[in-house]
Amino acid sequence: MLHVVHHPGYVVETDRMGTFPHDKYALVMRVLGGSGETMKVHAPEVMPREWLEAVHEPAYVDEVINCSVPAAKQRRIGFAIDERISRRSQLSPGGTWLAAKLALQHGYAANSAGGSHHALADSGAGYCVFNDLALTANRLIAERNVSRILILDLDVHQGDGTAALTAGRSDIFTLSIHAEKNFPTRKARSSLDVGLPDATGDAGYLEALAGSLPMVLDHFVPELILLQAGVDAHTDDKLGRLSLTDEGLAHRDRFVATEAKRRGIPLASTLGGGYGADREAVALRHARTILALAATINARDTA
View 1 (spheres, rainbow, N blue to C red):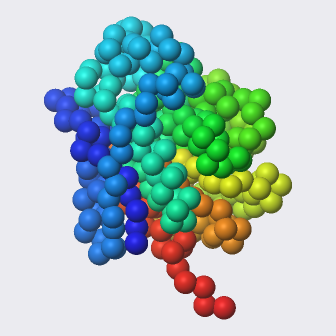
View 2 (view 1 turned 180 degrees about the horizontal axis):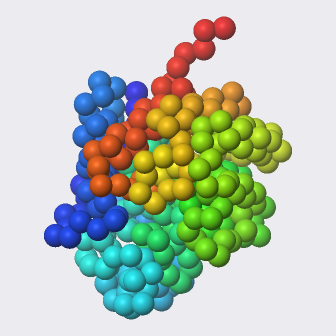
């Protein structure tokens, strides 16, 4: 059974088709629905304001909820914050939190949105409004669902907001594997950063992943992995600078799920980045990641 968190409010129809694909959440769900996989869809609620303000500055939370985000911050985010975007920005962290709760119960669950790893305490950035990864990790630990969380960021861009919001915490480990010369220009400091050169392909990427993830899992011993499973490391991605193939992404996903399963660590994934004119192709990459993670976690051992 594939457990997916989704809400109709994730999908925002826009007149302009900019770089950020506001409709890709619906496209991903359509691909998953046609995959033949047995799937249960769970609807999230908005992340309560008290938990938003536990990570983000109350003044910024107020700006987003009341759709009064200053123009300079909206430019930094990359799109305007209207009532629909505001609601999605509150639903998405609720979805990541729910996916994490489901993962603790079932071993794996996916949020069909989320992965907003550039959002900072007082502002959004890079198409990210609220940082669902940091919000979810903080809430789960505060409510004593788990005591140690690994946020594994495999988006092509460094998870600078997540790193900044969780800096100094011994109960949250951030591992970011990204294109070193890509956005953001000024990187934050994750617990462990693995910056890759432009045009790194399957072999180099998988070597970096194998050289870092098992070590972190064995030394930090998390009780949950929150995965930012962006597919913008793909060679055809509009905003990526790496060169992974479809099989490279699949190998990445199977490796992460296998390492988690081997240690009995629940895994929750978020959508993360994926950009390009062919929106169906991008949605297919996201869906394949979710399906690969689920298939690996749910596969029966044949030893």
